[in-house]
Image (tube, rainbow, N blue to C red; front, side):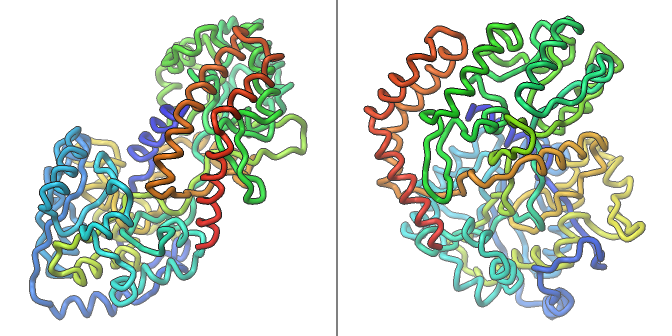
Length: 529
């Protein structure tokens, strides 16, 4: 399951989280409440031309982006800001697949650039941001933010939860991340063939019982040999379906108390239902093999799954049935009126932390450059580019021009952002910027998923100390392997569910309580920030 989540996260990064930039007018519909309106003064100040400085900047560019620019100096945003701030950038773009190796070599050799953007293969510092500061490789940025980043500081001051996701347990800020202006809606959830529902006169299922009925009809009336694609770990994406039973297949919290889902009664109920679906042929008898979702859905073998909104159009296009119509459905519940407390959930903090190293001789200039991206004008520039060139304001809304939508490079819009706006790094992102790249039904699915469940029981982004991390891994490595194996056996009937209590006792003997204690300590630290 975790592998699948990483895949969906990568797709998300590649397809959705890249956003673009620009403009000189603040659009009323996207005007920043948490970004100070000091941009004009700041730009005027920069035109006073401080002494030119050179900054060496390690910044990841995937092979897709390299179709558009071979160096980020080819970005119109970087060109504009280089002139505004009188900074000459020397970019380091590690070859795709060699990012981690080059990063680790750079750390080991103590040959640090001035700035580093993490992600897309460039890992976070081994041991975390606190260790990077303790090792005297990264600067603690708190004081620089206080003195040279008023716009970023204002955003943090206005959102206590956002601040918790950026500051370490020890109170350090080691990098500035990509921040969404507003948290993005859920982008994965239940997906079903609406055309099949219409053909059979069926209403969209919501309860688990209704889902069972619909899938049974798909099998009987649509010759769907595998009505539902469940996933290789026996878990639909992002806790859909299992969340109806008040649990997930991992740690979660209720009123800030840690629980471990795979030993809870609701987990047993979920396994019993999936075992029934397995025995009735509603899910693939070879589901642990995985990897068949696309062919199953596009050939009519399956009529429902859990996935992201980005699959709607390509699957419909690839389908053997020209009438195929996909829609998103609410996260399932046991009975009407229930609301699951698990779903795909997005924080405003989206990663891509950008750090300033101790090798930087001009950290104030580097910080001022980054802070501009959190201003009103920086927001427009980074998300939409330059007015009249890459975007226009129509009926009070930003709209990309053909230079972006039908770019001369012939690449998808999310890739073109790297040249005509800003795709990733430290900036304030408008995730709506790519809405016009997706069909209305796909975008509507995100609202359905977002509103049908909440994230009240989900874990925040806690961090473990180095010592906790080692101990936790030693405990949970064996437990996770055992839980994954037994989940498949219970669903497939290899092990009867009347042995569930024996299974729980075995997990407890494997020192689960210590793992819970470590998680609880980390959660308490997070909440105390």
